[in-house]
Length: 363
Image (cartoon, one colour):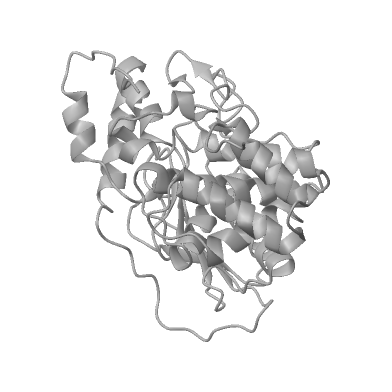
């Protein structure tokens, strides 16, 4: 498959991006920041470079937040929200603890509520006791950096930027972004999918899947009622787009003069085979994303009940760290048969989905 060609920029953009490639799990993919660097105003280029630099600071390390604390009982949430006050020192100043009063700061409340909704999905549906299944405290830091256009899981806590105000709004605004990033923690403790190539794309897709399920459950939406958009509400009205990714129609989420066009493929025939974006972890996640969407739609009803259960059991019990798309397909098909019966409607839905995105062929 041919690699995508990079647009000439007049400066050493590729060298800069290669030097700052980083395994930290951020919601905004690097190709969007690249586009800002190429097509944005001088001010937009400045904050795009700064966002890339901040992410690079975490390369190869994980922040240690707080000290050893009493672990809550299963079903007992423990959330702490910190305010970085536009600095980059984590965790920042504690501004809301579990059971504490509502803040006058919407970012604090959004981080608190969405972390709780993510906990509830995992505990009430999948019987998982927090991110590590051992009652891990859910710590979040808001107002990180100046015009920082990203949100990320750093291995032990959530971190949210406020956005630049021109292209991106605050990153606590989208519940599926918070569910997405916290799911990187679940993957970290379970399959440990390597953040490169197809295994990295599966890693990103798992986060999109469960981030979307958090939003769907809060809105009480069935699969056919959901929008399947990741990052709904992140863009300002100036941006031509509905979100960062579309699980329903990969490649259609945005088409903007500054942010560029959504590059996600929906079929393996169009898979990105270059080295940027850690081998296309955000780009190629469109393929397994579409497979989950198709599965959920064919099964029908609430997507977290059956399709979500299949994907969750696969993530926890079957996937290895270097799993590729074929391994993901085979595992979900097998798990569907074990949970709902060989030849069941559910198993056929999973098979059909992976076939439609070109990962498997059924003779």
